[in-house]
Every structure is written in C-alpha cells, then in structure tokens.
Length: 287
Image (cartoon, rainbow, N blue to C red; front, side, top):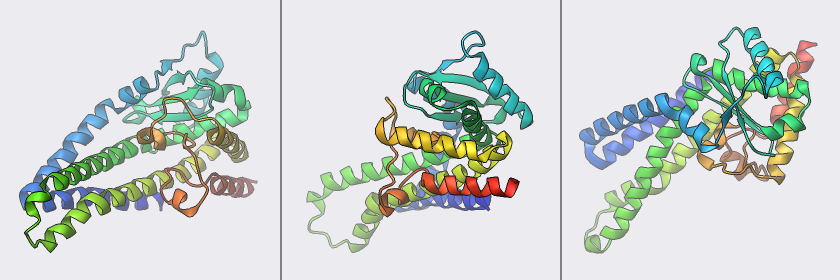
C-alpha cells in the first residue's frame, strides 16, 4: 500500500513539473521540463550520497575506532540478506542517523556520535535496522529524486515571481486575467503542491522503514524507545549544519516541531507518537 501511494505521488510530482513547462512554453516547454527532470535525476542518482556526506563532514568509520558499530551493521545487513553498507560518523552531540546511496550495493549509513552515547545497544540496533530498511526498499533513491524535482519546481516558481515583479510595470495596461491565473499557479500553488507531495512520500516511507526495521532487529519496542529519545533531543538541541533540504533523510526530523495540524501537514516525518503506536502494535502482533 505504501509503495502504491509513493508511486502515485511521484507520478503527480513529475506531472506537476511537466505542467509548469506547459504554462511556460506549451508543448516545447513540456518537453524541456521533461528533459530537465531526467538530467536532474541523473545527477542526483550518481552524486547525491557524496554531496550529503560532504555537507555534514561525515567521516568513514574504521574497525579500529568503531568496531562495535561496524559489527552491528554487518550483523543486521547479513540478517536482512543485503550488501554491507559503508558506515559513516557525523561529529555531533545531537543523536540522529540517516541513510543514503543510490542502491543497496552503494548504500551508506551515517550516525552521529551523540546517538551512540544516548541509546542502548538494542535501541541503536533498531535505528540501524530502520536505516538498512530505507536502503533495502530503495527509499534513498526515491527521496533523492523527489527532493530534486520539488527543488526544481520551487526554483522555477522563484524565477517566475521575480520575472512578474520586474515586468509588472510594462503590463499594467493589459487585461490578462488568464495570465494572472497562470502566474498564481506558478508562484504559489505549484511549489505548495510539490512540497505537500514530497512530504507525503517521505512520511509513507518512514512508516514502512519503521515496520521493516522493527522486524529486522527483532524488537520493535526498542526502536520505539529510540525514536522517543531522538525526538526529545531534536526538540531541545538542533543538529548543527542541518538543512531543510536534507531533513527528510534523518530518522527524526532535526527541526522537529509537531505542535499543530499545519506543522504536521508540512512535516517530512509522521508524528513520533503515531510511529511509536504502530511499533507497539507490531510488537503485540509478534508476541
């Protein structure tokens, strides 16, 4: 069900980008935006992991310094029957983790130094299993493609806005109500729709990774406890150098704020209490 929802939302996002091309230049614009989306996805496919790891100054873990962590990842990867991902460490007291990589063969798991000091072994195993689930389900590729397309739409909307500002004086005498509607679509509705679709895809994949990770580690309650702890720190201590563009990658949104329905609508993650409830239900089913 989650995969079907993701496919539908991804198709809507691509359709939105092509529709924007149509507004700009008819069939030629549609074709141009289609080509742009292919190019952007190609770049994201090959280089997204390197860009993100460099952004957070992540260092590859060595067996001499992080043997327990590497052994935990290797054991869970073997249990999941998937290739051993590379393991990176981000120097930060704020507990969090993310996965990246274009395929299971090129998977990367990154954890902060803080998460290893805050979580118990079974809780950390739950987090690692969650990130392995993202890699196994190819969520890392899906989220990169989605973020790229949404970013292109937002960029085009910004260009359209500035273009409208500079050309407003020349068009004051023209009655162009159709053009005004198109402009509103470009500047306001298109980026809003792109953001909502992106958030919807991200939330669906988090639920799936929680379930897969809970089963993989064998203890959904440990993952639930880990989520509650990481959420607490996310609310009280922001992750340095975190950016909204990469917030969807982390196990808990580093800018987490679930205060009202509006915040939940635009959040990259489901409310932590809902994720915990689903994991607790999964634990009851396993028993």
